[in-house]
Amino acid sequence: MTRLSPARIALYVTSALVLVYLILPVLIIAPISFSSARFLTFPPPSFSLRWYQQYLANPAWMQATKVTLTVAFLTVLIATPCGVAAAYAISQSKLRIMRVIHMALLLPLVVPIIITAVGIFFVYAKVGLVATLPGLVLANVMLGLPYVVISVLAGLQSFDPAQEMVARSLGMNRLRSFFAVTLPQIKSSVMAGGIFAFISAMDETIVALFISGGQYQPLTKRMFTALRDEIDPTIAAISTLMTAASFMLVLLASARQKKSG
Amino acid sequence: MLALVSPALLVILALIVLPVGWLAWQSIYHDGFTLENYRRVFTEDIYWRSFALTFEISLAVTVIALLLGYPVAYLANSVPKGWSILILSLVVLPFWTSVLVRAYAWLALLQRTGVINQFLRYLDVISEPLGLVHNTFGTVVATVHILLPFMVLPLYATMQKIPGDLMQAGTSLGASPSLTFFRVFLPLSLPGVLAGCTMVFVLCLGFYITPELLGGGRTVMVSMLVSRNVELYNQFGAASAVAVVLLLSVLAIFFVVSRFISLDRVLGQK
Image 1 (cartoon, rainbow over the protein chains, first blue to last red):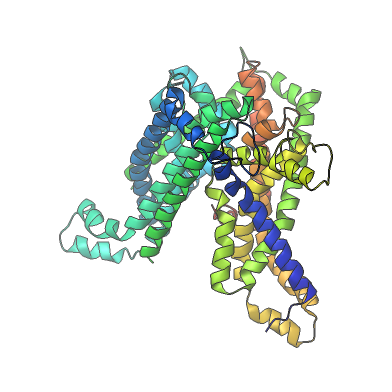
Image 2: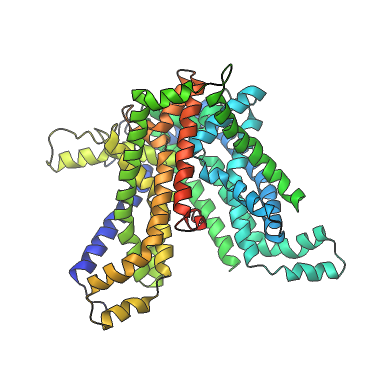
């Protein structure tokens, strides 16, 4: 067995401190959101739901929440089928160009988001998509695509294409064999990809800062503006709700992925 | 098959290839071709100071993330499976919290009336609150926090592939544990170090939300230069030129790194 050398102890202590540093900010928000104090005091003087009430009673925050949820759902509805079709084609085709297309689909992860955001702003300004819902959805579809493609490609890697061949040799056409044989087996990676696209759309801030406006501002844009001005504990309440939503979605996605083995 | 990829490809072409192309065009064309925007970027003080600051901060963040991330990845790699799953879950947990939420959390922790200052005052360690945020320090603390998972995951993936026998062989041949670590383990983990450092450095170059909210207006990183030129000064040409230089820096880094390790390794983790 490893005996506890000084080096080993140093390793444990350093790692523990780093993990505290990682977790602390995630844990600090919930207590602030349930505190009755207007200004940050720790420990909180007394328990209160006033910041949640303030969030729920404010029409501007509610409108922003509606925009965020609408955008996230529409993003998943569009990005998932597009991403699945693309991943399927990339995994099946032997065309040289597919490698290039595969790389192109991962571009949103490579290009710094601030550059993408400003570029989209200029293009939208020309075609009149600034401060519109379709504009916001399209941008989020683009940002969510890589997650669907990566997740589904990983799922397809463990799938034996010969099974689909069998279905087709038994008389099914390509489309039917895909839906009857392939899709059920990659279902969990499709779900996981869709969930990641949803979270990405829910958290997206920078593109929204440039292209959203008027009544179509998502939560993140309003939060950013509010944070620049002053620290309002309402943000803590919203943050707590957003974090809880993300965590539940991630748990759902990982439970799905485990099921598929 | 090409028909199947076309919807996704169309979205990518219309919403990232075209916009970036547009930026590039706008940076050199304004009522005729001009290099005026680039001349400004490379000669005017405010521009190159911001580029220098961005590269300095990115370098500092990368080094700190490596120093903090390596022990954690090493520990996760050397403990039984249940423990390593726990450690890695704690590492990726903040990953799934919005960057904006974490910026808020750091403000709450670091500001003059924040949790850390209150705690230190309570302990009588300090009499005046420390200026921990609205400066470069706060930016670096929060940025490292956001980018640390991008360092730990590739490090861990690489360490997993190092056969444990090699370390035993080293020890059985009479080397001390530290000697086997520095002569065997550390060199074999270098591809992971390179992958993690590349990802952290490149992501940091384009960081926007954290420096904007925690930098207090003094830490003007390149991304803020881009956004200010667009939002405040309507200097679209200058903003485009800055964006192009930033993008070319990122691509150049990826290109150089790809000579040493496969890019899949860098981009594989997300």
